[in-house]
Length: 198
Image 1 (tube, one colour):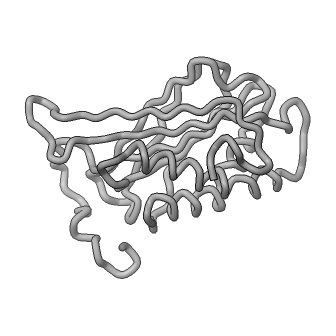
Image 2 (tube, rainbow, N blue to C red):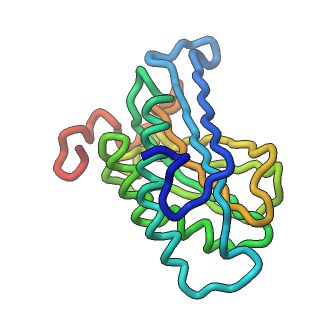
């Protein structure tokens, strides 16, 4: 499944952002911190009107999550995904629920499967905005939400999206926790292999 051939959704644009941070405060990270964001800008058939049943978006979101995860895994190479988050920016003729419908449980479950598993709730943020919007997508560890080293985020600038009748869906990922993290809390290495956290 690719983003350009999603059943039930009309895609106008796709963005894939990747950044790699090799050091912070003069201290190298090993491995470096790779962050990836995949963005799908989708036509919103509900724009400008109230629709009680958003089930068509919810049903289509599983394939969307699968395709976005595949793009992210490719962009993350040679690293693997260790944390994730999701977001939506809804054009001003739409409602916030239009974006939420595309990033709820079917989307999240497909995203988890696509990146090799994940047991934790996926942090998210959504808002309505005009083209040129910026969104901060929160990140957390994919297997346990309370791994403090992995509290982070990805900032995405959508230069020409969403148009009033569009929704921009964002899936964000990182391969590790913050560089130089040292504030204690649940340790990522300690949860590997625990029941329900593999």
